[in-house]
Image (cartoon, rainbow, N blue to C red; front, side, top):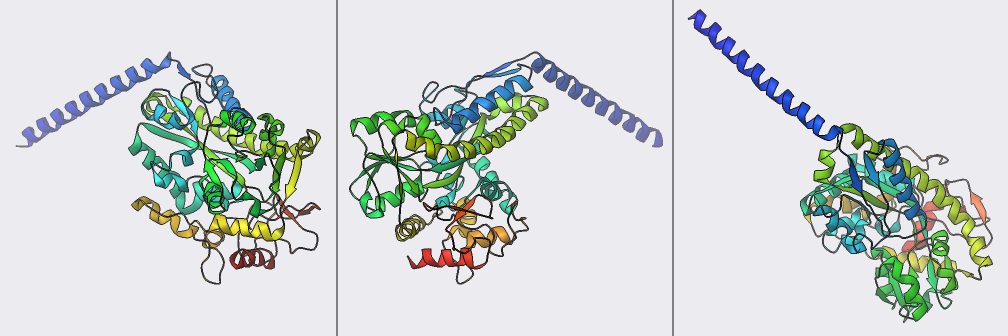
Length: 419
């Protein structure tokens, strides 16, 4: 009996060794199959010039050089590979390997995606936006996005690509107050802004970025919200829209996503996957610096080019922000219920839920912030007479309570609620 058990043990070990040998052979063959292989990618994005385009060029060059040419990435202008609204489908079906997409364009098909950008533009800088997408609830927003796009098609999300937006309102006629919006024809592609414009009496349409200049010059639209001052100059908007609204900004920061067809991604060896992920991270740092620096210089340049800079009164700014915040993000899918819960405008007397969430989830204050109990403070006004606020990338009026003090953000939120 003992001999039979030993024989069975020997047979079992022999079978295990055969399986291990076969598995090793298959793995070696797979590595050999990709060792000499090269990939050709032609990613595009939604913007044909400016920091979003420059970031794509930077990422493409990084991947090509860091991979030693094993992945050759050639950035392509919007519309060259496919129309902007079809970029996600092109990746999902394998028609093209990679794209940088703006997910809010697809929220009509997948409502959850409206939560994956800057919801209601409540987040003021890329630090705050990164906490929301990658850190909040262990990166739940990013996980939900990956799950939703994987169900939609063969899509792998490499990572978010953040940028300093500072989106302005470019118009052919002066919009020097909120009451001037009524009856105007706008192009707007951001749901929170488009909702607010429509509520204030404007007619709102969407068109690809490359069509905005022509639509402004021919009178198809009277105004647009699309990009920041630097990108507006790069797009030539100063030639056809001579009035730019500086205060309030339509949107401070935003995020796109670098996506790759999942079959292509799974085919890549681990070292090339690491190269692509590092390129996206480096592209974020590049866009952060260039976007902020370019927009800081652009206002003076715009005036030199004949643009009239418009600033609204504080009363109109509060009305605008209240209008934007009056459209809560509603969850139309079971997955959307959890992340949308803290996006409600207020929660009793303790301030906005979204603000308290950041300060109470062991997220450290950003550099330059003194740890105000209310967490990241709301976008401040940018008056004609400027004084730098000690808070990271904030501006305040002379004599106004600093947004670092507890009185600052609380007073500001109360004003918005009253409006």
